[in-house]
Length: 461
Ligand code: FO1
Image 1 (cartoon, protein in one colour):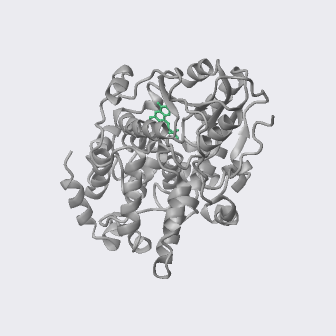
Image 2 (image 1 turned 90 degrees about the vertical axis):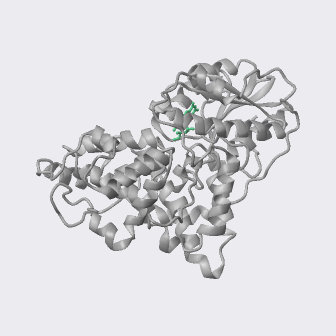
Image 3 (image 1 turned 180 degrees about the vertical axis):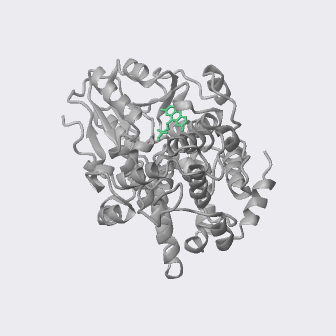
């Protein structure tokens, strides 16, 4: 049997065989859920259901809870587990068991394949996530398939190389949207896995958390709770109240015109295709511009970030930058800096600049920073650090520690953009060289920035 053939409604470009091994007679199909942590609009899940139905076996979904995931802390784990608790319930309603096991996937997934017919997983793009998939597919003796469900146009289908900028990837993605931006058919499960003895795990968040000794130095946030229902709630609020005026106001930090979906997209609790399709339903003549502006962020900018981490091995270091920006930053490395702050001063929001401090506090308090302020924040870290290399490390460290969507392709691309990635050279100046500069005066001219500062000060934690 061709392992990736004949699954209707799932584009073949989303599927990849990870090894050349066969399907065998087994008790169940195993879906190792990693990136797409949801029970709806999930191509990997629907593919797994089709396969299980075809073989007349139940489907078991497995999630591996990993201690010290890339220095993540309780803020991230709590949000993720709130999501998984709901995903477990939603899967049960479909007759599917979700088993949550402690341990690293390289050990746990092979153990769980002992009685399985085949393994399915979702696609991920960061290096170590790709590495897991490679090693597991080699070590098991049954077929393993990877299914893309967290970008709209699969990265290698959109482009076969690293793209320079949004302007170069945009036409390539637009060409494919008609084919890939389509609703996903939901399948009925033929044989339930609920009555089987495949799983004995509990999904009680506090007991799961206490078993893995997690860094509790950064508090969970009040403002965002994890889970698909929460994501859907944010989407509804966005479409009903904030989409109108998005193109004009989404850059303004004093206003609230953002979707707030990035943490949910990061943990795969909502599907980008679903978000895009729901948004397109709102395309009336009077707000076409708003819909287009939001889809530009959700599809083009987000998928440019995936293209970046997929094709650029140095995505988490300053080495990832284009030659022109590396050269110009090197040339200006010795320029005198008006201010130089330590990582500790940055972290505690103790700079001379109240706008920068407000952005840092927003991230620490809420787990998210306004998109426009993210750019200003990163640029100023470059300006006020001893060297560009140190600045790069500090920006990534703080981003990954406090942002709920740290460790995401978008986060890596966002930091890289502040240092010149996906941008062009501008007028040369001290410290920045030809890298685009941003100023506090610009914030004052464009926005009521004091209102943003006040808003952040008032957030209670
Ligand atoms: N993925 C897992 O499979 N298991 C985990 O325990 C886990 C923890 C985790 C903590 C913080 C974080 O930002 C991500 C985490 N992820 C985990 C991965 C996440 O679901 C995504 O696959 C990647 O972050 C995508 O970039």
